[in-house]
Length: 418
Image (cartoon, rainbow, N blue to C red; front, side, top):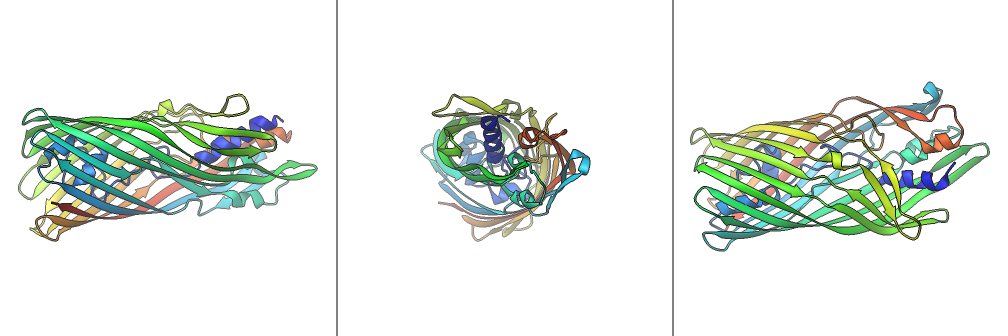
């Protein structure tokens, strides 16, 4: 077996293992108000400073300084079960709790300069993942697909600075720069040969790095009760620097292409109490084709995917109960990205979001916002080829498993106008 090829496959699978409970490894957790309405209309509602994460042009609708501080807890339930090879004759077992729960913070500040310009800064996350399926490497089988199983934690943070410009009473535009920091810790180890038995650590990585992206947006205010917004986020190829070891092979940098995100949104106030809103979002996961590594050894393509571009659609409503309370609810359908090649490392599927939320207005300038989302995926059968099994000269190197990804999001934020 080509040991170098094996080590690279293990590295790439490790970096992207897990579920963030959106298409691919994308996060939807930027605000409590957004979660409560399934992010419908979030690029144009502008009821607090968190709109900065979706559309910088919407800052033009603020005539006062605005601050939002939030925290989301994601109770993630990823199940990987009945993993086997050779038509079920080799059993690796199941992992009923494959994903780590996550706490995801965010902060936003918008500062109007005059009637035309506003600036803003924010810190949030668009991508992240984490799982541990290393227990299946201890199934007692003579050889295990170590390259497909292991422990992974990847965290990304997006630091954004944006500016908006009001062209006239209806039109506004905006642009921003994203400085993205990410870090990952991962390990792949287990039994890699049947005879003689050999226990090995294929990968032990601690890497981090920075990347630069951006966002542009626009809003059209039909009147004070109806408005439309759109934005386009340009994502970079992320580079993680660190020491990646496999026997005598060392690589210093892993390159992971991130997708671009386009969305359109609308908001319509039907009465003083009721409003409806909606979003359509396209993510270019088709750009996520290859993961490569560079360093002291020749550059190499470590993993190829055949993902497809993905859409999500959401709709929601807001009801103003009284001067103290506002309620909201929403529904989102999020399309999966896996096409012909499925993977245990990313058990993706279509998902449905059922959400609700509320705001309690402490006074005319401050509110505490709550959001909850029930995310439900589908049962998926995964067929994935293992380089380890292939190298062990087994007649069939395909691993079969069944996966499902669900979650509950709990979110809270404080918003204030100065």
